[in-house]
Image (cartoon, rainbow, N blue to C red):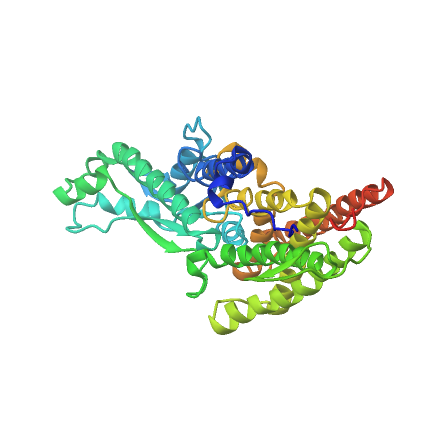
Length: 429
């Protein structure tokens, strides 16, 4: 008499000694680690070396005065000289503007800083050579910063502006050393030192933001929350729907549950997950606002607009993830991770400005979601929700992304269904 014995269990050692067990995860995990390292650090290794056309305003508010017996406007001379200075790498895009236009572009995020020759600059320089003045005051150039564009972008613009002002001061000093003699007097030692390097530089905030704005980083982290909620929410929804429909088992610790299979097409499954992503985007966006604005007291205005924008942004990300998962299956989660996270973060232009990124990342920024959403949130939080500060582009890109996700996702699932490539439960096959 024989009794049925259960087959012997495979040991962990036997599994680990099987090369096929190692092959797939080794290739995928190793590739992901390598690519993430290259992508994340590749965009921040040398921002100053990658600098290209950083937008800085040049303003001449000087009214001019008589200098050495001749009418002169040093502010005009200085700003023209800075704008015409050789810049073979095109690191800076100097924009000569009136003060009103410069402040307007500063307050819409189009300028990262402003260098201004203030009113009375020529008169102050002329006074340096007056022999009767024992302790002459030093004329001052003004640098205006814009923390709303991000701390690094504002810092780069400020340092470049200060360097340009100091260089102009030294060049101007070479033409002013003979000024006291031309005015018929002898300058004191202090005056001669000032004439050699006549201009001081003062730094002020040109477009202030709130103290609870993370030095201009709350827009980036808020946008990141919207992307993460859309991305993670879509993956959780997709897995949860598969469990509910019986296409995947639910495992909670030692408990494993397999629900009865529900026969449903790929297209209808995508419709279910897409609707759920949009509905849950309302919940997650509301909770993000509750946590950041209400509990943490983040500086924010235009709250209804911020809420609507957040819902639409998170929903667009969720629809994109659902489309990729529906088209590519499990590997779609990895593809969406690269599109919405790995490639998106370093090309967002939030922590490192786009003008300081390598060409590859500037190209990605044309369509990657973090740049589009970040510009929209930044416009709402820091620049009074101005359309020209990036909000219009953000809305347009959200609309394009939504339509593209729906067309691609339902196009692929419809093709699969027509070809008879249905999802079949293992026990049914």
